Length: 246
Image (tube, rainbow, N blue to C red; front, side, top):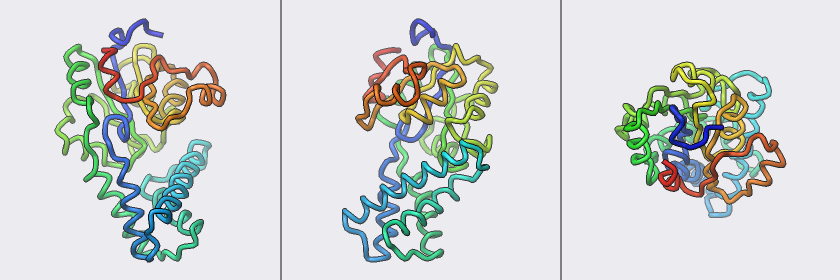
């Protein structure tokens, strides 16, 4: 473990809910689809999104366990269909296709830098730290979103599932980023909000991590599930808190 955050020569970030705020796009896309079926009460939407998220992570986990690669768009559509069945909705293929397209559109349109993100990038770049992003989100969106936000030039490596045909926490996205950065794991820090995909994934290839705990889970529950070796060097509640450590 590096003794101080200023000693890392490279920092990798997650995208959604770490550097960017995008958490309303699944809700609003789901709400639109349910409105077409006349089932868009707050309770209807909440139940649908809960099933959708569960189905999505289950499908990604199947790929992690060796099922074979599927692109994020396909996984989202399959998850929407599974959520529809779980909620007793009759969503035909045309509606599912339209809703999937809306998911993709809103993901780009809603993405904004989280408070503190730009200042963090500026400070790290000023110190000569090599920066990158690894995301599990839609193929191609990472580059579109960064260009739209005007921050592409801060990063030396950008990795989405299509680049490596793999998802975090699989090793390939992390190993690919390290090769491009020309850095070894011990001098690279990873910052993310998903404990399993981000913290466990980066830890498995030898990186130290910063976990942004946005959902109020306890560190103890994850340590008991994934082991003490996955313990982050820092736990934050908000990305802006990272500024105090730079």
